[in-house]
Image (cartoon, rainbow, N blue to C red):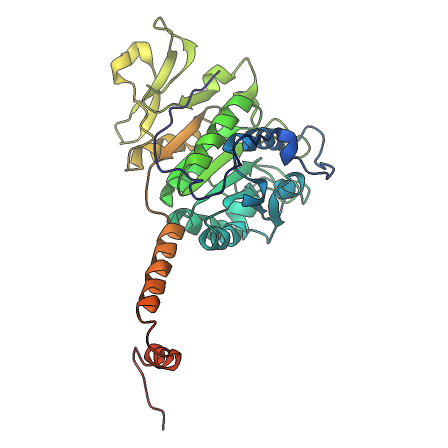
Length: 370
């Protein structure tokens, strides 16, 4: 299935980042480091790495103005394999470090690479606050629904009842839905894609990089050692037409075997409870099918769509951009405040330094201690 994406004309997420000189070009090899790539054979991380290395030249940015920050986990080896600046940082804290970089350095394109354990367990608060603040960064959340680096324990996205080394009788936890979590945190760009669909993955990455603010891209990624086949339904040629619910802005949300009009024979409609549900198009009529609006300021419908996987449609998953809206960013606002403060200091520049210091110290509430 090919999923096309309609791109809005928001302010660029890489505005202010230095670009290549005229006539200069880059290829994927320019973004490949000399380090040996060390993941398990068949790991979905390889596919994502190749897609990112192939996509980065399209940004037209200087490599020294791109930085990848990772936390801890299999996916967090990512910065080693890219010939850009990068940091293999602290468990779960990559969004916080990236926030500092994005705020202090407008000339950087800042990326975060994290996994379902790193981002949603110890790093949960750091992730939601980056989304809430809308810092100008792109977060790639690799979701294989398992702890791979520590050898197969259940993770915050493992399904209830999951039998692992740490849950031999089945997990009693209820899993996080990363897209629902991001939408609940008022994320301005929230998307989901698949490691093995190179075209769709690259399209989503392009949209995420172009977005001004925090972009979160959940990537369904296979772990062949500890959770092999977790996403077979949406990857198998025999089942993916019925399993993938493609989200394309401005188009009816339809999927499955083609109907007489050439579009999917199944679709989404609003349910009586206010959410969404899957129906046969022939039973309700094409005009009743929900048209996807990724630019809707109210995230209610996007959230309802994200809940499908957790509402009994276990072998079906919405794929694409759920939400893409424009809102002021934390780092832009912080830099604007700093510029205002600097301007005020410059205006008062005629005063002697000691006088300015005294005014600063005594400018607010003061107390005399006796």
